[in-house]
Image 1 (tube, rainbow, N blue to C red):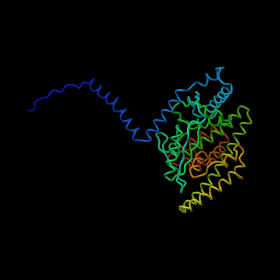
Image 2: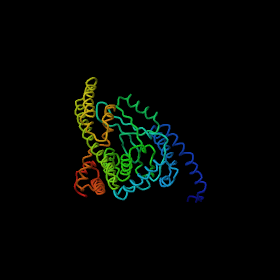
Image 3: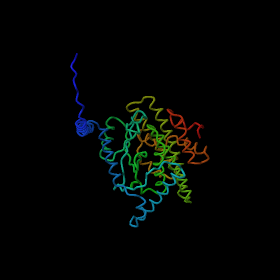
Image 4: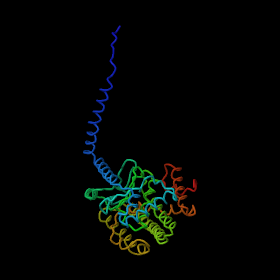
Length: 369
């Protein structure tokens, strides 16, 4: 018979100290290794640091409005945006949480640069993958030198690129997003539309469906601004918001037609000089439309901007992100008798009761609304 061996009970204090030591030593080492080895990890770390810097500089808007030392113009605009935020919550049913209850002066006129890219011989977006939001066809950079370097690297790989400034972004309600000074120079209609646009993201956001998310937010932003100004008796800004929404739908139709022509031409597989001739012809047609009949029919955009703006595959993709199938949102709006709150609710019901489908297909449904 084997001898009985008595085992001592574990020294849980010693075990705890060893585990703590492994955590304190091992986790930082793993993070350093990840940062050194992975460009994505470095990017996310930098974004996290910049977001933390912004959040640490927040000042309560209510206190700024009440402070007589606050610049009168800034105070007036902050009051307007608090009113728009309250209207979005009470009259539109948007989820506002603590978003836009604070203000941050970022100290520059551009918050970040946003990079889009596409193959030159195909209208296919280059995507980046991030936690929570999934695959997205753009990448934001707080460091402008890094942004230009990333664009240059993609161009060396033979891709079209488009680098553009952005003054606002949304964390989809995960943080109490502050109002940023980078949007305060916009006119009053655009200010309100931007606030409602960002709040729409907190209300409805589908993973890896960037075009739908941004187009939905554009719809809610401009129709919401129109309703807000109408409720205040501001007919001028209400009419301007309605006109901007008409312009967005006009541009949607133009870029959709350009995308259709590009897809058809690229399907033939042109290469070399033939590809360049094809691109020159189609982008020339688009520029003629933007500086001619389409551009000059716009009510709120200056067609001369389009004469100077670049045109390539990446630009087309970026422009369509915010203007894709806008008339489908408008159709739901008309179907609900121009009740924007009911329209938003109906769209939410349709996309969530038809899971796994293209969300645009769900907009065709008449059920659930």
